Structures are given as C-alpha cells and as structure tokens.
Image: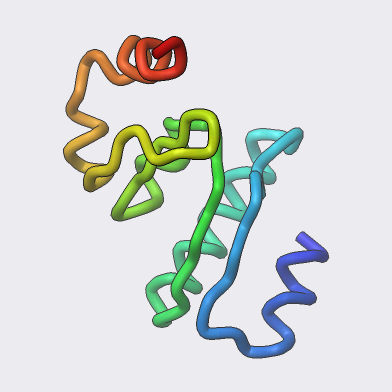
Length: 96
C-alpha cells in the first residue's frame, strides 16, 4: 500500500502494478482492489501483472496471457472469463 501511495504522489497518468495482491490477506486485497477501482474510474490508466485470475479478470478490461515471455492469448476479460477451459488452455499453451 505504501508503494502505491508513493507512486500516486507524482500524479501519474499510468500506474504500473506488479502482483499488487501477492501475499496479502483477503480483507486487504479487497481494500486495495476497491481503491484501485476508484482510481481507474477517476481516469487513471492501470497496467497490472497478476496471476490471480479471479481478481484480474474481474478488475481489468483487457487481458494478455504471457507464456515464456510471449503473448500466447489476448482478449477482453469478459470474453476470457466466459471460457470454461481457461485453466486448461493456459496449461496447454505453457507446454507447447
């Protein structure tokens, strides 16, 4: 939370987040997610790297799945969230 606060002090137009929910208690995750949603609604652009699909797909509007440093899948999060095979697809892409 401190790192996000420090980044916001410079009034950025783009906020880059790398695993912002890693290792946090569920209550803290929810608080940070709500704060980031308010920032997004205020016009701040967010670029987030996140492995927790339940959080990322519900928060973002677009998703890129990277496998070994390359984009393996790209779509709207709404479309990806509707895929029943998303977990299987991820592992299939990772082994190819």
